Length: 264
Length: 204
Ligand code: HEM
Ligand code: SF4
Ligand code: SF4
Ligand code: SF4
Image 1 (cartoon, rainbow over the protein chains, first blue to last red):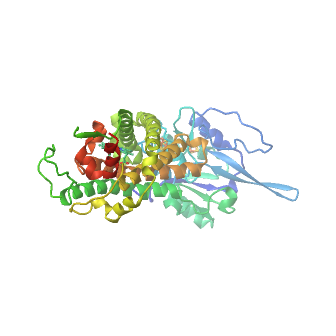
Image 2: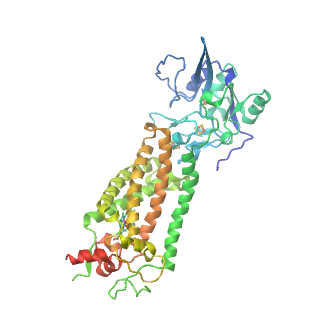
Image 3: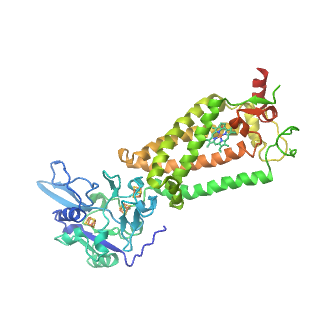
């Protein structure tokens, strides 16, 4: 896979969805720390707001509404970049340094290196990267600027209920397992950096049961690319081989500008 | 009687070289996008952003010129006759040293296949290229499929083009005259395209 990921020291989140109260303090904290402007949103007769990640919204709480008789209940899902252990976005990014894994095992980005090809949009199994007016990639970077300084990411720091906890990924998983939680993202894609403790099935939260890099992206990068390089050199080699073994089709011609008479 | 016979008129040769120059521009500007192994090629254009810009521009030029070339050749490349089938049986004599004779018209079957492939590949590369150009306006699955197909058609094209360049230059001495000067030696025509030669020399 070519990425250097140390599973033992990797940092991550445990998101315990049963603890989320839908206050959206995390959304606000993220905007504040990352200096992201507020956006106009639309009211669709539901308190979910905003309704999708945007170039200036790196995380959001998805409200999953269910009606049972006259009782309405919600499940809350913290939607964000999941910092995949095997990240489709890094796999396809052609510009070194635009998307990369930092020493905490977190998938971070550098807008200055981004060349706006938008391949990462297609390669992400969770449809996370967004593009704004600057035409550059934008997503959660797990507060790269905070965690490298030993601080807790803004959203986790703000979360009043302990739904979002930041720390050493393997320790978070061990703790959740001890508490008999059902986990999402422990092993898929070499483990997601954001692991969910879920009170429901992945599908209920709008997640694929077994997330994977899209098939055509896999074929493109892992099959066509290496075979193509082989095919390129193979073709050149075959032509050279033909030239020195079978040889060119020369024309018997006394006044030819070709030297010598062929063996045809 | 002149030693030479006309094979391509100037407009067709110019068109062929526009296709060729835009093809190699696409190749060089696309290499860095193909794999991070080739990131260095971005430097030829002053970085990835410019390489993408060049790739898009060259793509439009290649699409228009290559499709024009394809349409110009259409009637000569889409029909295969009995003489062509004969050619296929021994792969046009390219796999043996011995002298071979085929009654071939303007293009041999290998050339026809190449021209048809490039025509189809141009259409597919152009269409998928458009989806990749505006990925946010199309469904994700379509852009994903396009990225894969664009790469696949490119690989096919470069492999065909390598064979084409070989056969048009050192593999068949005298052939490149057709694209450089528009004329070929009569002996070349008699050997490689006798049926075509009979047509054009008979009318002279
Ligand atoms: C250095 C590069 C190239 C050279 C030296 C070259 C040379 C030639 C020559 C000499 C011919 C005429 C063959 C004949 O008279 O029978 C020809 C035909 C043709 N060329 Fe090229 N070519 C080059 C690159 C390309 C590229 C990049 C393409 C397309 C992507 C292309 C497409 C064609 C097509 C479609 C024909 C029509 C005949 C056929 O199908 O073989 N050429 N080329
Ligand atoms: S969720 Fe998407 S953007 Fe985030 S690391 Fe995984 S592939 Fe990359
Ligand atoms: S858009 Fe930017 S970050 Fe995304 S793959 Fe392209 S260069 Fe990398
Ligand atoms: S970790 Fe930082 S960047 Fe990511 S959602 Fe939380 S506050 Fe935003």
